[in-house]
Length: 256
Ligand SMILES: [Zn+2]
Image 1 (cartoon, rainbow, N blue to C red):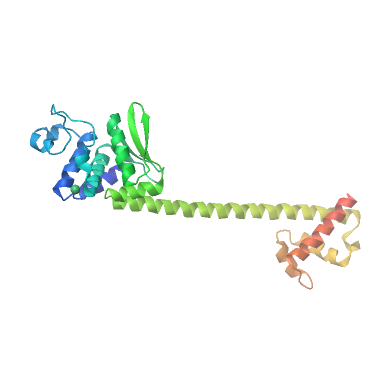
Image 2 (cartoon, helix red, strand yellow):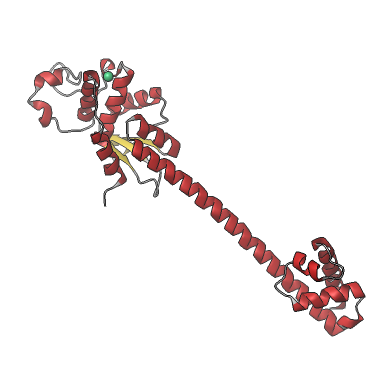
């Protein structure tokens, strides 16, 4: 099973970075965040153009201002960094996107850059690694579209909508269940009261209006008050039925 991270990266590998300035920025992002230097080592001239080497020709783990001066190149550098050191969790499991580096200054440069672009990344030290992370579903979707992973973005948004519908459905189902339980509990109390009255005074000795409702309640234990109301002659509203049942229960309380 391909992870959501892998899927996202495969999508990114398929998107071409066109302008030479952006290609360089993407390479810089890839290298700074851990892609293997050997692959580029043969081409020292190319490395020189990436603004990633110090005066001794060693990789310097900072983001050079020149590299991210252009808007297009910022995007390419961030994409490169994500390809090297990023992960994004399957949105069905959790909302979490990270870019990890062991280099403190690099993580701080990157945090500043990402926040300037407008992403609410946070930085945390975890097991001697600096972790830049996003936990908000919308921010993750925005970030994915920013680096060009549009399918991954859609996936996050779809899952978010699915989750919202699911939650809405659960809420409705729970409140229906709660209502049903209330109805059943109320019916049980009403029936107990009527049985007490029957034993103590006899249902036939009750006033006409109460007797009618008492018999109907006993015959139709499963019915709601509104349904019972339709069987009364002449039909009675839900609150009318409720009122009579309350009177029955009050009488039963006095008799018991
Ligand atoms: Zn560019």
